[in-house]
Length: 127
Image (cartoon, rainbow, N blue to C red; front, side):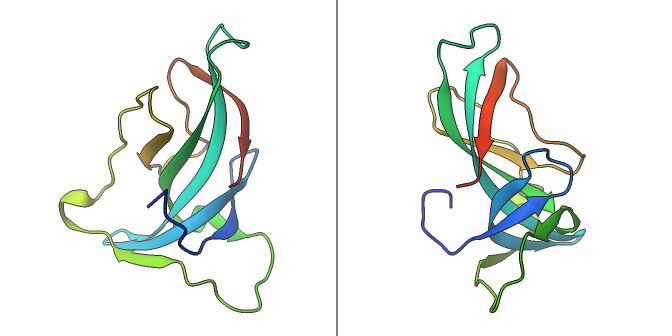
């Protein structure tokens, strides 16, 4: 889902300081609605701020209540919708492989933004 060019919309996550991400899909689970969001992060290894920096595309499912539009839209953006049931839900995180440029954090129900053990965010931005 990350590599394709499906419609997306900028949204704000309530409790993330850098806030803005791209909503790429809505999902309905027995527990309610969730949004699949996407952003990029520039990371470096802890203790090595000038070495081994890298940019990754990150995704996560968040409860819909944490997502808000930054601006009103004249017409709805047709983002993908999915029914979230079965073995695929709840969405597990993909193990963080430093060789990959894509990391999925799974379902994030707690507050705050996700962290990657051993890596420090240098900068985050919306795609």
